[in-house]
Length: 365
Image 1: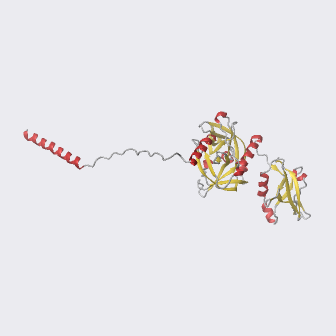
Image 2: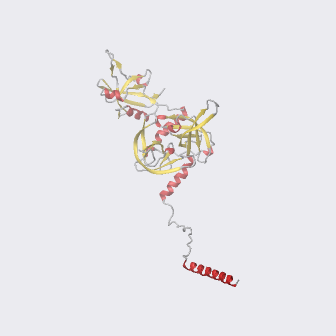
Image 3: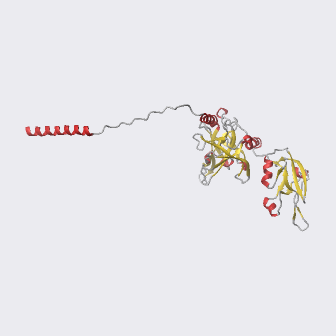
């Protein structure tokens, strides 16, 4: 018994000696604490404050739009709603009119609109201008939820000017990107392949879901509607484009009034640029004159058949209001800046002789 007790005492003593030696040789335990917060040396910069102020002021006007298609099952006859695409838009007025890109809501049976506060409304596409990639959606939301956007002037823009692009690509919250105007007077093709003129080019990143959202100046005023991206990869790292607000502000009232674009016309049919090139003609060939139209009343002459059955040139438009016309796009660009009832001076050439015709533009039938 005494031997056993002695052995136990030796073991306990050894354990104590081992523990003391281990603690003596052990490294002290390091306790990691959260880093101390570094206090800023000053307030936010003036440019940062300005951007934040613009974002906070305008973001309540920006919405998320989902293009909804409705399908009916052939067997059960159940109706299914299928999202076709998404984009952004912005509140135009307190009556529930929302402006976006046409390609965002093209062929939509329902356009579901999510406001900044997360509330969602089924909208109706009121009208569109496909050749300008602009559309208007109507929602029945309380005026208290609708904050209309401030409108600026795209005619006063300058290359190098700061711009901000706000979108709502996911329907959760708004996003902000910034940049500068890198070009003015650009031309891009719309979804129906008509040329959109005087487009704003910016390096502000514009993601696909931001299409239809507003491009703003540093005062938070609308200067354009973000509409397209040019990038080899399709990512937002390329060049962004926006339809200028001057075009939007001309088109939207027409959509609200007539549900469509009422275009000023001369009352002529034009031959294609390819025909003019084949015939070595400089200008736009008047192929036909519509009976009773402005051009007809002003004495404009279209192409006719010669004795051999071939076509004989009539009037060729070479100038409108002092602007040289060398192709159909030149003519459309001039008319895009005119309104119904405007009088234009058209210089035409016929059989080597030129004359000036004055006529009043009328609404397209």
